[in-house]
Every structure is written in C-alpha cells, then in structure tokens.
Image (cartoon, rainbow, N blue to C red; front, side):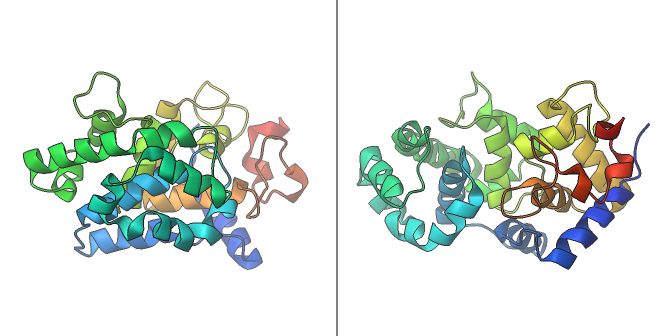
Length: 253
C-alpha cells in the first residue's frame, strides 16, 4: 500500500525540534535556480568536485573543511586547475584529511571531466543549458552510463544526481541512507532490501508529488534522519526505540 507521506512531516518536526536537520547548500541552490539563477562554468566544476569529495566518506567530516577545499582548487579557476596534476589535488585532499579510497582515481579523472564539460559547452552553449536541456533522469544517464559520449569519469548514477543537486537541479540522490530507508524491510514499497536505485527514485519522487515537498526536501529529511551526527535513527542497526515513525515501519513486523 502506498503511503501518503505524512510520516515525513513527523520526521521533519522531530529533526528540527532537536536541531538535527542538515541545512546545507543543496536547498539554497535549488531555490536559486527556481528563482532564475544561472550557474557559471566555475560553479559546475565546483559542483563536480564537491560530488567527488562527498563520496565514500561522512559529510560531517568534510563540511568544516570546505573553505580549505575551495582554496586548494583555486576557488575553481578552471585554467589554474588544469595547470596542476591530479596528484597535486589528491595530496591536498589527503592533507586536509578529506580523502577516501576513491580520491586518487577521482582526481586522475578531473582533467578528463573538465574536457567533457568544455565539449558540452561547445554543443549546448553552457553547462547550465546542458543540465536543463532534458529531464534530470536523462541528463544523469548521459553523464553516468557506460557508452555515453559524455560519460564523466568516476561518476555513477547516484553521484550523477549529487552533481545535479550541487548546481540546483531538484532531485533525490539514491545513496546508502536513502536506499536503506526505502528498503522492503523498512519504509519501502518495492521488493528489494536495500531498495534498488530505481525503486528509491520512484518512491522518493512519488512522495514529493503527494506531499508537495520538493524532491530535495524529501531526500534532506530522510538523509538527516539517518546520517551520522544528525538524526542517526534509521541506520544499519536502527535505533527503533528513538524512532518517531516506528508505527509505519515494516522493521517492527
């Protein structure tokens, strides 16, 4: 049976009452785009780099170091970035204690990805024209699917959504927290535990429609409810005794 999504508002109220809801830049970016902002090429490069930095690590460890990361990448002066090797940026990221097991390959792919962006600019006029040229789902496929002429290195489907959200495109990132939450043994309406990427996107998008929330708000509430140093409720070993939506969840069946 499909939910009307009212549990999201109970989660939101709990998080805000405890000061645990993540209040990051995604929401601001989506609002800015809806109000007519055009994101520059430099902002798209920044969005891609933030996507890499956020992968395979805890965001609470990264966020305090964002000013140093911005400085490391020359505040996204693209010509200066292109003048340095991937190893230069890898070393800087690890020096800031923000590295992951993927950092080396991500930084090795950075110049290639900027070249793809430059190709997209030549075809579409700007990166903003590209990311708004079709549905978000199709744009994600173009930059994340093997065989695409515009496949970004080290970007899969979930990170493709992360990049789009970094430049104000409304959407849900089907990461570990979201897929676990929408798994068939918890709040999911599908058959997989954790939910497949397709299931997580479908359920998240439907909840946005029935609640009137943006897709990003749906994602933000669920992510905040699950993530370390925020809600930490619906984690791998869930804290059901603290959960305000326990009555809706199949985990207690």
